[in-house]
Length: 158
Image: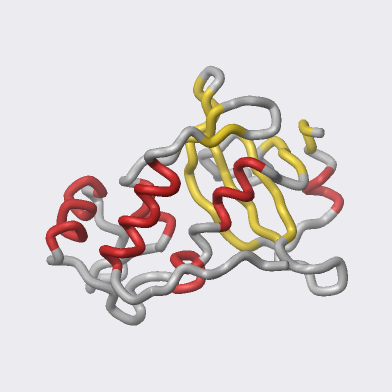
């Protein structure tokens, strides 16, 4: 059963939820490793872009502009699906179906946390990508993905 979606009433409220429920909590994966979320990764997660279609270079400044109300949701300049599914990151980090080595050749992460939020007949796979730094996993991104045997062949947990 899919989890609730986050209402997209304002970018400030979505950022507040992200910081309160992901950045400021101690989330542990099934192996006991901490999964950390940083506020600046919010920009990439929602695929926020400027009027030129580019992600802001200075993510920390963009976060401050969101907090101050200077940046707002503008249709076509963010990914509504990815923004509304941010709460799913908690389940992905703490209760994944499996954890695999990153299968993306150009990806910057080391591990992919994989979970189906749909059914076997109608799967809704999501992947949370983390960079490994010691015993901590640092969140990079979360996105929908079709999962095939070739992905699961890279499984490292369970």
